[in-house]
Length: 181
Ligand code: IMP
Ligand code: MG
Image 1 (cartoon, rainbow, N blue to C red):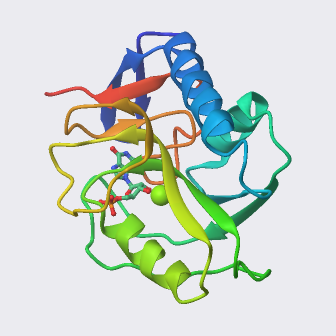
Image 2: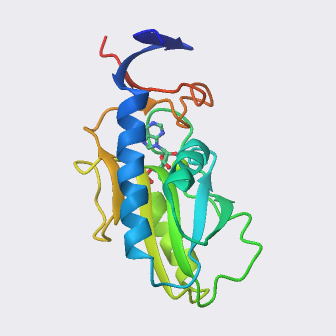
């Protein structure tokens, strides 16, 4: 894979290799497997579109009977958060009494995860935990604990492994960060 990619008007530089991603995801998968060993059939709830690659890899490192589902909650249209969070689409099955693990691509300000957390809580799950491929601790402004961050990154806009810039870049197998001009 090349060291830089161009998406529309922007250049991105490779910052996290595929191997580093897989290693971090397998660590999270092993930890979740240990933590949920004695809990009844957890439900992995992926947040589309960004979490599809992380979910696919993470589940290969989960050694538990579990269920998988996806919801949609979009809040981004460019390189800056809009502050507007949309409604939850796709929660077709009851999560009452279930151990839910939210699977996110990235937690930035925490706005999306906070909103999703509130929307899920009203359905009375047994528990909610958050697994995210990437976590930007310096821009996170919520108090809720992020249970399973695979990798912590600085506050830079990134693409790849499911994450996009205006819908492009999701197919990249490594993570690329916006190159400063
Ligand atoms: P938050 O609500 O600020 O935590 O942002 C969460 C959502 O914004 C993520 O689920 C992503 O869809 C998107 N997002 C945040 N940071 C980035 C980034 O660096 N690249 C691409 N998407 C991002
Ligand atoms: Mg997202």
